[in-house]
Length: 302
Image (cartoon, rainbow, N blue to C red; front, side, top):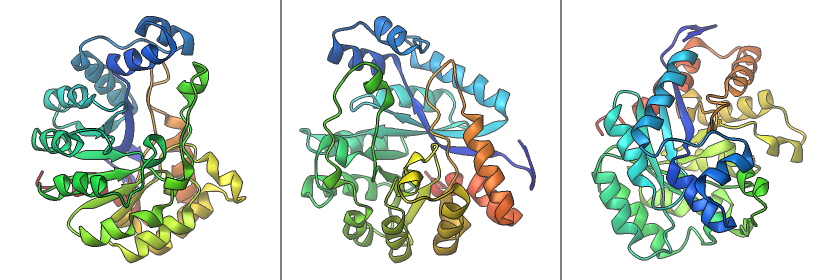
């Protein structure tokens, strides 16, 4: 992709892979079929074969000039879908998958998926209502620590799932489990593991930066519209400047939070972040790290 800093192989660190299983799981919760669920939210139902959905994403990323993306399986138990995508296009995708550590055999399932070639396990403590201090969470982190070039993605802060609202489904999340500071113990005990906190901490910016300052193995991703900024009266440029001051361009991962078709890749998020970085006078080296290299570097040797 041509950027103001030159030609970059842009890497998106946050793309949701809404497979057919994702729609089926949501439909089961609201008494609809996968087809009815997609129709209710106005999205295109993905093909049954996740390889075909992967091809759609390849075509979309090609059209936008994006070289690589991290695909996130967005319901627990859907690691097979992103595994298919990664195996089909290993030079284009990194595979992330969601695990609820409170479920039976979660650590073993995480280990199997990571050893099968997936790159990061995703934890959503507010969604699944558990504390990051729970020993079952540490067991999942240990699974990642035992394999080189793997990461742990931890969603902190405000969590809203728009598709659930559209379907009239409740979201009984627990914000008490959302503070990035709760990740400090795990990140300190497992310095070889990279921990990714998305959306700048999603409302816990200060806490995310404190965590990142204390733990050099913590990275932040910049994805989504970051609507949490309205709580503190912040603008994206200010958030980026503070993150760069504390963590440098080598620990920020560009991401969009793209997810569904027909929208596809969310160019507007990229454009807003690019404009903010330009206004800040970010160097070409820092821009390249954030937009291209950091995501690839995180999984080097995997």
